[in-house]
Length: 207
Image 1 (cartoon, helix red, strand yellow):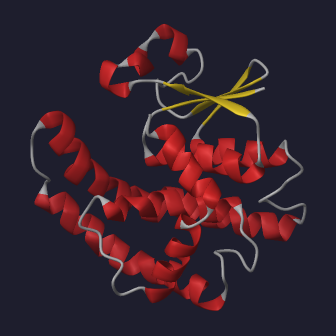
Image 2 (tube, rainbow, N blue to C red; image 1 turned 120 degrees about the vertical axis):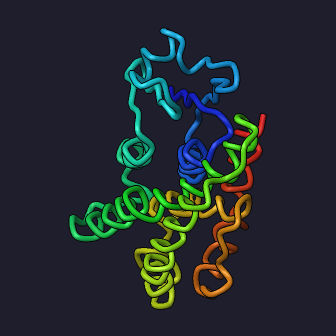
């Protein structure tokens, strides 16, 4: 049995969307960040840093969103992943690129323009936004190029890299990030957005 612990965030969306795409039977349990339930000892037993998402699979805990996505795929016949070492590496490198680079800077927008306003009643730091935009202006073309050559990020088949990256890209809907100059990204974003599993996952975490 899989139990996903989460809240309405793009990182949790990665896990629930992956589970939906894989057709996994899972339970979703809300950890209310607004009530600091993530800092309670019970949850820290699932995630030692008191964050979400966290996964319980038959009493075994797994945390970190990329790791969970890979684990879900690995325990379900490598669907959305690959038995081929090179293709798996391509999927991994795209996920790592998102985590370490584009996701970092899109996350900066999210924190500055969404979290600061919602929880701290203050506006964004212009210097942080300027730095983030500078990096994204350099990094978005890498994704645009990949999607200009193939339907999905790692070829012609949907993979966990697409779900993982898509969830970061949802940030642009709530911030000043613009995708106007990237038609291939926009095409791919709509393609993923329209998937029933994505729509269902958004409904699940929006409770």
